[in-house]
Image 1 (cartoon, chains in turn brown, orange, cyan):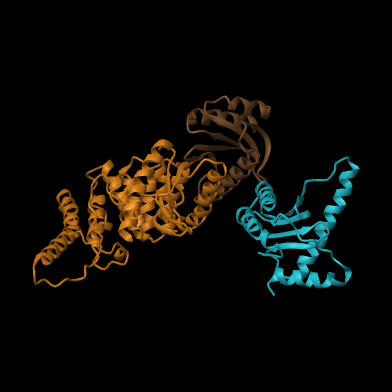
Image 2 (cartoon, rainbow over the protein chains, first blue to last red):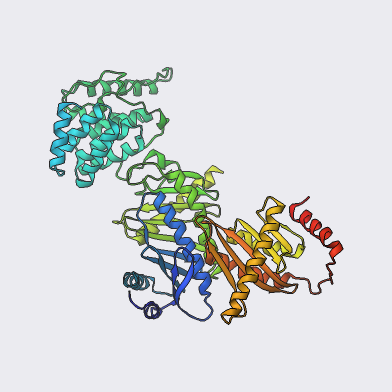
Length: 115
Length: 308
Length: 153
């Protein structure tokens, strides 16, 4: 497993990302973080993990395989998340000007290295 | 299990790519073993998605299972792949007749008799459709309850089943809905909510804020209806999405896209108190799924306004 | 949700709505109950309050042994339900929160919203608290009054 903090810091270089956290999926607790000032890491971790868990239940009910990437789009930005195995979730907070396509690719690659 | 089915089953097991699945599926359907027929046809369809006869077989089985909307879609697909497939024309003629669209029924059955003039069953059905159409045009004509049109279920060149054949379902559930055959034809189940939407068929689910289904439908890859149970979970998902966006000071949430290992999902809110789930296969990029969801949202809003 | 202090009601209701907690108890560090949600029997409230206060007191001693002033919170993870215990300062003194939650929530969510509850309580507390001396002869009367308030009887 690669160094989580290094991967998160690399992810933070993507334009428009305000930071990223590695979260314990079951607890919603932070494992590692790289966040800009003003971003509430604990809130990001807890809420994103809860959202991912609910989506897992919904997709399972729909007979689909597990989510591999999600984007919650809002008025002033997005929350991006991808599972890293069964126990971790990589979450990023993006501003409205973020390059989400690039962020997605970087997150999927980082998730692969974190498993 | 009869010898012929046993033999075909063995042949298919030995060679899963064999087209024997067409005969096996039909044999199982005629014996009323619809679950087995469904699985055989679905598996064959996954291997031969461009084979019109596979869609035709699937449609017949769906019809027998009492799923006319999906049968309709499958026959439409069959004709898109092979515009001359007589059995698909017969099937659509049957569905149109049951739905009360006599003009469309006549069109398809007339084509069938033109291609196969020896098929007396289809010819008789066509006469019946024409008689009913004439009666409905006559001002003093009394309406008669339509008998089951039997030709749709018979193979070309074989004897048509007699009227009232128990193997044919009555599709009273279509309730006289009129729908037209064209390339963008929609399932009657979707017609009410997603009217005017191109390309929409399965995988559109409209839900209220309490997790109750308002319209549309959703089936899992095994064909099981999961719409109501997924609808119940979506209410919690949307509340969590709204809360996440709010507490992270991102404003109101606008959409939630989810890539799964075998499909793409998009959740949006056509109105303040409704949710729309759009599900598509991996062959449809997420960007397109989101655009399609926007169009479906427009259709849903129009329907909601009409319904109020 | 019931509370003996009216100003606790709104912050606690917000916490309950966001955290999806099944049971919640707010008490003083001495085990006197301030508010409860989800309990159906007064004896359960009294038992939980006594045990919660005792757990916090004993873990406080362990904290001192390892050189900590106190532990901020404790989590007990069960098979289906879990317990979150945390001590915090209020304008009315040191209180303890006991939260029972299940799969509908997570430790992260409970912690997140519990911290917000602490802030909300600090903001909602009346500026001047009335002096209250709990004398032995009126302790039982006060306890019974609290229980009546907590169970609406």
